Length: 294
Image 1 (cartoon, helix red, strand yellow):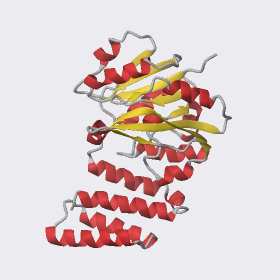
Image 2 (cartoon, rainbow, N blue to C red; image 1 turned 135 degrees about the vertical axis):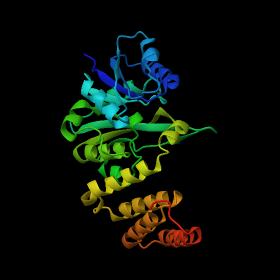
Image 3 (tube, rainbow, N blue to C red; image 1 turned 90 degrees about the vertical axis):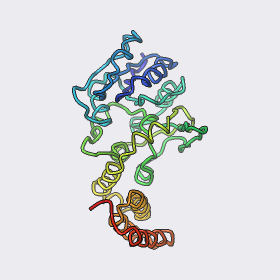
Image 4 (cartoon, rainbow, N blue to C red; image 1 turned 90 degrees about the horizontal axis):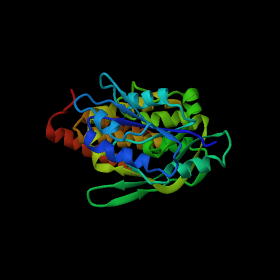
């Protein structure tokens, strides 16, 4: 008997795009799935578009008020009937054999494997580029700590039982819910990497969604606080994350915060690049006479 896959698709005020993503799921060569569309939008409901497909494998769930992408995915997980859970955003697409390849690869593994993820083709205004992933079964916990974008939700297939053990998306996080989840998952389970671009990500739309800098910055800080003990085992990774956070703060002219995290990075790793950027932000904060964050 084939295993049921629950595909969870959160949507937010984008009824003009969600239909393409639904078609991508319905065209899968692996046919034993349910598609749970969780509508988190208020201004523009997707109900009419979703129900126009008239497919009994599709379930439509509507939030009464907007709760965020993590909460929408959690609603899907709680309502999922499948042995496996996969995620697709309402502006992305899959290769037709994406689910089939992941299920077939899972069948060759043991119970220590909790998730699978694939390479990604990133679609931009000017073309596309591929983000590769390590092939085969591995312990990916170090990767989860090193690269916060190392496991894109659109590529993941996770055993339902994994959520029962490690929990679901942490809705307290204003951003970075995906790396938070995967740090927990990889701590308990090995994963299976499939270095084939089976997921297609609309970069333009994702950049628009992730444009709230305060949420991005605060979510990153929460990751550091929550997993301080884990990061202490990999100080160079932590220094690089502090450096990246400092750059984010600098770009929105939060100069005090930028200096704070440049210093944190330098204390861990006395690197010329970090020092140069630190002095650069000192000069900028002096010349601009102010900080946009008081």
